[in-house]
Amino acid sequence: MHLSIVTLIVGIAILAALAFEIWLDIRQIRWIRWHREAVPAAFAGRITPDEHRNSIDYSIEKLRASMNNAVATSALTLVLLVGGVFGEVAQLATRLAGEGYLAGLLLAAATFLIFAAAELPFSWWRTFRIEQKYGFNRTTVGLFITDIVKGAAVAVVLGTPFILAIDFILRNVGDLWWLAAWGLYIGFNLVMLLIIPTFVMPLFNKLEPIDDVSLRGRIETLLARCGFRSKGLFKMDASKRSGHGNAFFTGFGPSKRIVLFDTIIASLSAEELEAVLAHELGHFKLKHIVKRMLTMLVTSLIGFALIGWLIVQPWFAASFGVSASLPLASLILAMLVLPAFTGWFRGFSNWRSRVHEFEADAYAAGQTNGADLASALLKLHKDNAAPSTTDPVYSTFKHSHPPTAERIARLQAA
Ligand SMILES: [Zn+2]
Image (tube, rainbow, N blue to C red):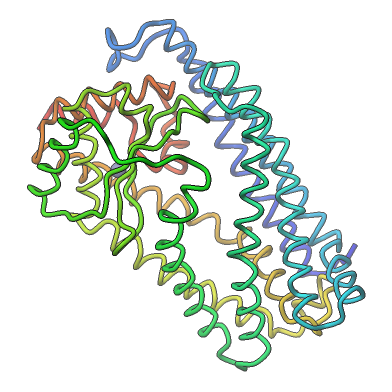
């Protein structure tokens, strides 16, 4: 144990953030359980009482799992930071590999592995218990394991040069290292945006051009009408993992592409698919993507500046039993400490995201047909077994999308 005023404050911050999460989850569980027996008015005639009850039971199981996950992650963070275990792992890395780059890499890998191992049982439970029970899971045990192995390989290949470069900057740049590290981080993200859609995603899924000629023609007409150029229109075999449906735009420049899950192609009509894509196009046309990227630029700059200030404070690393001889150890330590204090801002970004969703819905209604979007939203809502009612406080902090009923109501009013 390394009890000091610093570890005490960090410990309290971790517990406060956890308590807030659990308070929200419990509110939501109580709310939806309370509304389990009656289909909300907005969905009357659209979902059956059985579908409604099923979606509530499914949501409650997911909320309980997420609470357990949050408790485990917070407990682990407390043990690492307040319990001094992170300091011991850092010492072990220097004992094994000295104070050079290899020690930094070892410590980064160990930290990553500790959190990944803690996450594994929860991921297993979600996939093979909850998703399985409600009929969404298509992942086999073999695929689950292959995904982990491939994910680890990708993390090693992409993460190693990044960590070495950050360590190099830490050791050589001097006071303004955090500014250089921020520049590297932004560059790394841009490279990922090029690499992930073109090289990484195909490792996990089969992406093939959409072969349905009429659907293709319809989407290409929509893209031309909205003045959007993409480098490809793909269908992804998401159904090998889950029955849930989705569609997304990804990449930039030569890697810019539109991906539709095969599950969504199977469940939506051509008109509904067009409306969903028009919504996604709305995010581009209304500059939501650019705004999100600018926010990321600014918040990550603030984050790096904070870390830059934090790790040169003489009390910081010492409070957690971490020796200053391994610069990367202090950086990783700061990255473990900061989320306990910054998690509170997530409510704000969710609020902004909900505003953007309404705007993109309105754009889609203007470019296509609002009624098609409304029926698509309802189908996706049912396919995902989303609860048709939600605690307003929970929703304010946690939901990046407005409730389906509100989105449909606005589309119908327009
Ligand atoms: Zn959206």
